[in-house]
Image 1 (tube, rainbow, N blue to C red):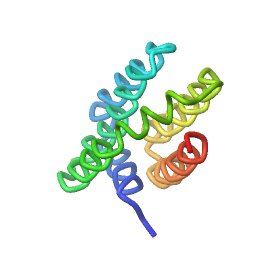
Image 2: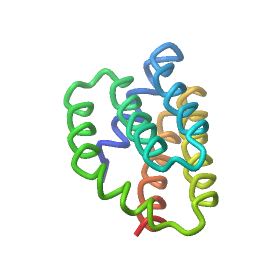
Image 3: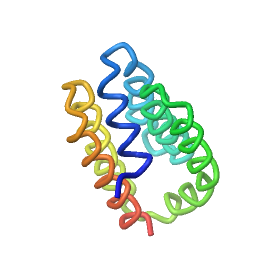
Length: 127
């Protein structure tokens, strides 16, 4: 089954480097958030939305925005309960960096696989 995350990653990888600039900025915001979980969550949401928007598919971007918007508070609440936040941050950043690297390398299938793995991994970690 192909998901919206996979479609977004495949589309974004095909758009090229300039379209990925908002993705890079969102990742930098996550890296700068430090222990501020709300700032991290906002940047994380922006990262996923930036990938969807980079793909140029309005339906996927709208779907991603709706999904992330509807779970934003649930994700933040889960983040607030993490006793080893530094480990969680490093895991999430590592996964995000790998997704961005695949996008920048023009490897759409790899980006899609990493996106799918990231979503499942983040869900296991947070819940």
